[in-house]
Image (spheres, rainbow, N blue to C red):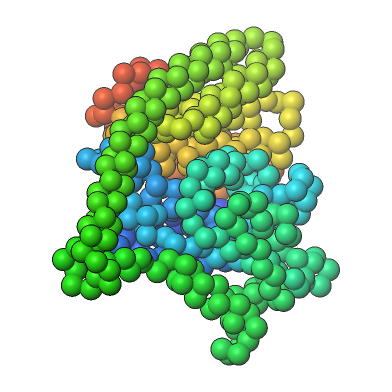
Length: 446
């Protein structure tokens, strides 16, 4: 199945009506939902899958498979969606064609992001560049999360060999390669667009793709070893019985291994929670120091919160509630950092783009929890971000009527989110109400 994400994010000079973007996460949720429902309708929930992903579509596929993994392994079976979980377990191979997984260095990565923006929109979209920039929250999380599962699949990386006039290749090899033990690199003599377009079945590119797909199918053909009573045994009854006993022994071994793994996960979760709490407490300590060194304290606080996030990303047990907490906190820290009067509007906008990335991550994990309190809390702070963006756009000289319209949208969203929050079970509702009233007054006066 091929999936290509097309992000149409406008830059900072957009109008308020066009402010909503389709994120990688939106496409991920849609892909998993559409695919799982199609498989259910066709009564083929266990049918093997081979993904063919071009460009940014590869980032969508990586996230989709990781969310499927969470449903099947790291979430209790009573809670997990078995139809979504079956996507990862059914996936046998992935063909990544020109997917930007990373950059070799900051300058090269920024160049890759710029060229991708040109390719998609012929416009250097600020929001797209920030989503794709090296060390962005989205890409950094993907780097760790997909690493947990990438050995489960046959991975073929298709590399573009032909560049465009003046700008060269859209995604260079250093960005397109995962550096996974299960990965095989294959060059395609075409540019970024044409590498997935074929003139006929005789096209070299078409032949390459089909040969890869056939290989994955061959390598995943089920075993034909007969079991007792199948009516197709080619050996003696004794040999068939030994074969059956081996199947039973392996099943018992898997059960024992699963029990040990669950115990290891429980122990790891206790250790992770303790280290995470210490880092978060240190971060909140510096964040609360609103004195003349507030800008420096914010930077220190952010480092502690990033450390807390890294503890979660590198742990063997994922707790969605802790992810909501750290991404929600990082979102608000970035918004506060954007209020520093000593930095230029471009720097403030960069902080707000990072805050939006963190907010999307917090919202994604809140959805996984099915907790109305977490969802309401994250939704409440999203209009704060929208209002702050309006203030920065005003510094850029945007049309005052557009700025006022954007602030009014933010005020309306604050009211709706407050109503949802008051109906939820969040214990720190007073703190959220205080922050909401501060932002409401600020946006009303400005």
